Image (cartoon, rainbow, N blue to C red; front, side, top):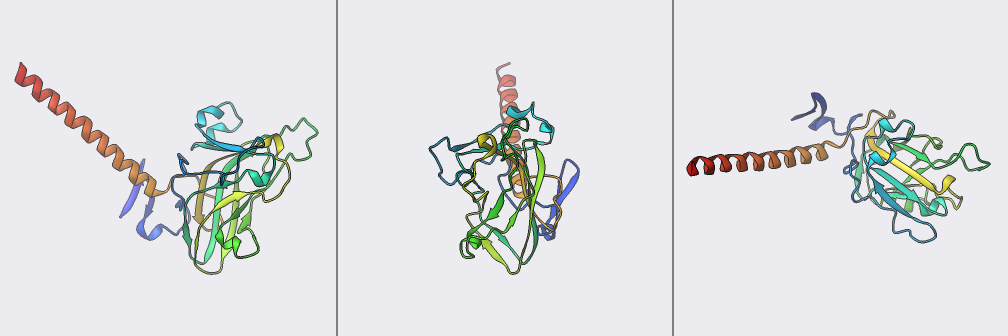
Length: 225
C-alpha cells in the first residue's frame, strides 16, 4: 500500500522506518499531550489553536496546535507526548517548531535555552537524555534533537524538558510541529499516516452521512410531490 496526501507520497508499508515519515501520532491536535501533572506556582499548560499566534514572527510555519508550557522553573514545564514508540537500533531525529517568551531588549540572562528528550530508557540510565536540542530563543524556529540507539527499545513516558531548576525566559515555552523520524535530518512536518488515515476515514464517514441524508431528502420530497 502507498499513501498519498494532496498528491504527495507520504509512505508505504516498507517506508515507516525511513526518513520523512512521522512516527508520532496526534501531533496535530495534541489532545493527550500533558505536563506530567505539574501545577501551582504559576505552573501549567494549555493547548492552543495556532490562530492565537498568527501575529508572531514565522507564525505561517506553525502547522499544528501549540503546546504552551509554563512554570516557575524548567523542570515544572515538561511536554509529555503521551505515547509509546518502539525504535530499532539506528539514528533518529525529533524536530519541533518552538520558542520561549524571553525579551531580547531586557537584561534577562536566560534569553536562550535547550530542551532534552527523555523516556523510561533515561530512567534506567541515570536520567541521561536521549539527546538535547539546539538553542531556543523568543522567535519561532525549527529545532531538532538527533540521537542514536544501539538496540531496539520500546520508549515509554516520552517527554521533552530542560531538566534544571533554572527560571524560564518570560516564564513560558511554546511547541508545535512535533515530528520523530529516522535519520539525522529534520524534514518538513507532516502528521503520521495513521492520523491521516483516521482523518480520511472520518471524512468518508461524514460525506457518506451527508450523501445519504441528501438522497433520503430527495426521495421524500419526490414522494410528497
